Image (cartoon, rainbow, N blue to C red; front, top):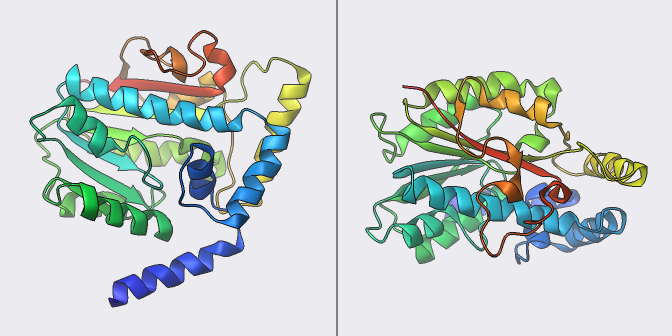
Length: 283
């Protein structure tokens, strides 16, 4: 076993003292890369927010639909997935290759969790094209270093539009961590014509006072994980797109973004508790 593998395994072991948001998400969408501490936490939260698993699956479905649209309709050939998490069904490179049979799309995955990086590397070694797909260790909260590592892969052409994906990540960036500054940095790096795909959970328009309290409790639960977070309203979330131009249908509840036959909450999008949108950088 290499020194790098030893370091990764040690980092994974050291991360098991608290539930991990990435592993909890993996558990909720039916993945297998999670541990007893994550499953116990997930089931405790599910008792308070019974549909949290469906909310997570909604985020994953949104990612798949946006990637397909970016490839098929917008002509995007290169993707950067920030905070990509654990590999599971519908990874970006798989969706892109299914959508474009020429298999010429390129994907850089980034995550700062050792277990996410380790499993991403294993997945890519087994099922991907190493000349087009790569996973790197980088923290979205350290944008200069992350972007330097992305560009060092040699997969991203500065002369072509990029689709930057920040899916189910922003609710783990509290306002006190200056997410506006971080997103503004990433927007600046993108060439004109690039697309920014964002989603996050919302506490907007709860159906009842009971649901409002349940969403508050959800935030409190996550204070005890490796990734405490913050829910936002549409107005609070919209600012992360900056001056990029939202593409149709705009910033909406995720199931309302070009739904297909398998979209959860397609008939009642607001019940999904997930906001999402795609915006284009002006020329």
